[in-house]
Image 1 (cartoon, rainbow, N blue to C red):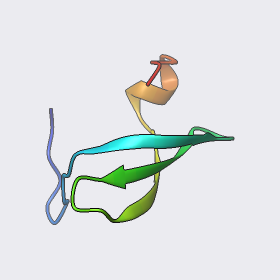
Image 2: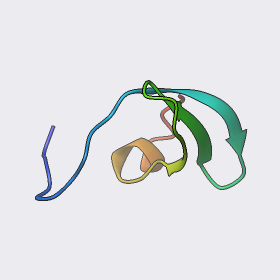
Image 3: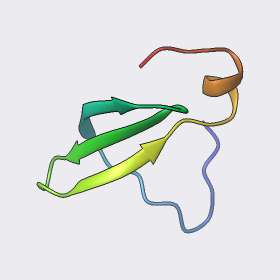
Image 4: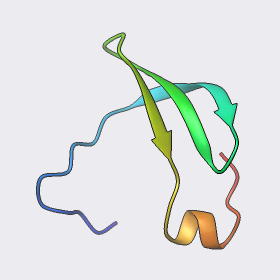
Length: 48
C-alpha cells in the first residue's frame, strides 16, 4: 500500500453508510469522522 506524506492512518468501525461512497466511522479512540473511499476501491466497486 502506497503511503502519502502527512497521512494519518487509524482504525475504526463503520457506523453508517451514506450516499456517494461516504461512511460515518467511529474510531477506536471514540471520535466520529466522515470518511470516503477513493482510487482502486471506488473504481473496482470493492465493498466495505
